[in-house]
Length: 224
Image (cartoon, rainbow, N blue to C red; front, top):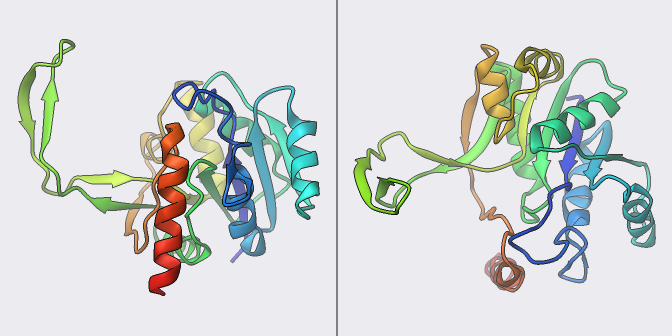
């Protein structure tokens, strides 16, 4: 199944305290884990990086034996970065997977399942049903109401869409900022299916997350 991959690695890493995308995770820069996992399934791979650092990321990839990847500058927000990635693709049809490079444990098996689901619905996203209690607060941190957790999902990436329809969805968005691509797709009338994650796929946000995920991934490998 024809698929292009856009890996978003253009964030400011404010909460991490330094550039997390080039921080080492299990011995290689964080962003390269996603490239290695998904490149075998991809027609083409684009990595969206902080503006002005394209050559730096390209050199890091080459130093670890990874070639054939396009590096483009990110935008002012996530939606703008994804739009830049879409603009860089040579493919005109098929499917596209959008993935946050800060999720290094995402697997090619998950991507394959998402592709198969998206071929039926137009869009597919991974996640897990919420089991914790959910509460809404006011701006001062005071609880205002409970949020029903029935049918509530926590969503991650990669997110897979029909490429033509996602491009059209971004055109229709008029530059509005969205927190993920499924919102852009749904806003334009697209249908998105949920796929239950079968393995851990957390996001690295804070410095301690690197070590936590290294332990988690080592434990999962031992159990297998």
